[in-house]
Image 1 (cartoon, rainbow, N blue to C red):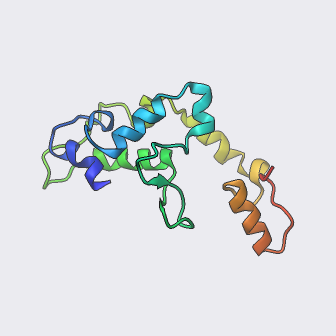
Image 2 (cartoon, rainbow, N blue to C red; image 1 turned 180 degrees about the horizontal axis):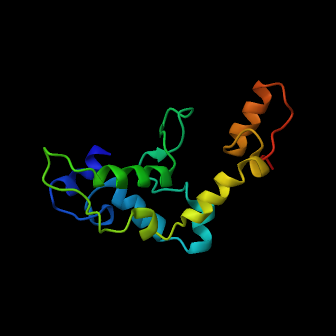
Length: 143
């Protein structure tokens, strides 16, 4: 993330999308290149030449999901560092807004968590593994 924010900190870019020659710019362009119907299915797919985003359980991945990484980078870029020249302006739309990712989807998932997932949430494989570790045959949320 330090490298992804370098163009902003050096006042060479105003936002993450304009941060030339960074992996975050490449991830954003890749994400935007999918149609809106594909975005929901393929948010974890990223450019093959970049280290994959994933989880702590996979050694060869960065332990973030794409949208979480984008949001954290955006938030971090808005922090004014007295030792650096630049930051993302407060007037600049947040990256998730810029990409058309609605907070309503997130809020719905949070507010109806128990209806959708019961006690656990995560990728189907992780839920199956967790269920197995707790001597359960399945957890709600796993298809």
